[in-house]
Image 1 (tube, rainbow, N blue to C red):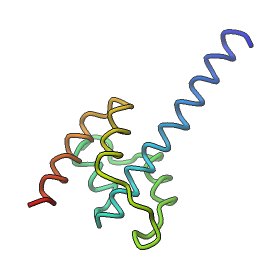
Image 2 (cartoon, rainbow, N blue to C red; image 1 turned 30 degrees about the vertical axis):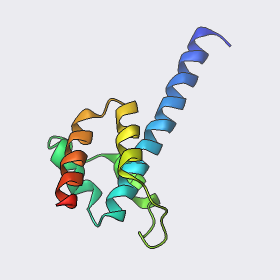
Image 3 (cartoon, rainbow, N blue to C red; image 1 turned 120 degrees about the vertical axis):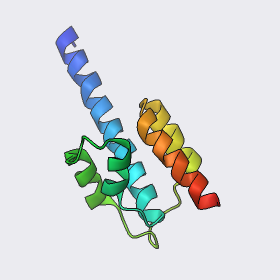
Image 4 (cartoon, rainbow, N blue to C red; image 1 turned 90 degrees about the horizontal axis):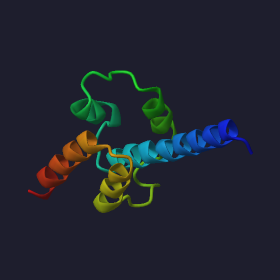
Length: 99
């Protein structure tokens, strides 16, 4: 495998993992009766249209059918991708739900 093929493989793997992170986020939102797009806009107001998020939302299941996505799991996944703005908004929402 040459350098270019290796780079392409790394990028492809990252994109796949990023899609999984977005799906975890979207399912967490569904499980907490939050609209993932509206919630995402709280962290990223300039990103009104996010195709990856729309794709992930289509893959979510009703909360009655979903497995639990713990707050810690979501925050850990967001941290792996350096998604600090979204993690901050999620943390605010977690604190609000605990009150």
